[in-house]
Length: 166
Image (cartoon, rainbow, N blue to C red):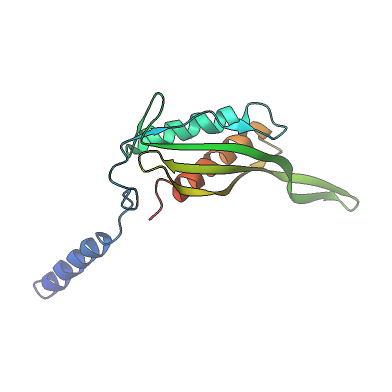
């Protein structure tokens, strides 16, 4: 047992030390940014209320992460965007008989144009197209489930490309 103790101790320290190298903090985020404004996204898709849902989820996630505080009005930074695409299409198929094919899963796809601005230095930190998707089982779930998954996915990708980029 005493033989394995030094090996065990070194192994544990190496694991903890190795994990300390990676950080998911906002290290790439300029230190002067403390507040953020998230105006309502525009909706250029045919899906009603999708822009509202994305804006609400984005605000919720920014608040939960605690990196920036939501500003009522002009913040140090702002994330704005426009939903450009919403689609709900078959994703996977199954056969029930020789001549009958059913859709087993659908996929909801959402695309938005996003802009992340540094209002203090009047500069653009990120501008681009972001997409998200959500798959749901059409036999047991409704489109709403896929839509919720796609909204969470696109918000996560927006945050990755803007606030959490490292």
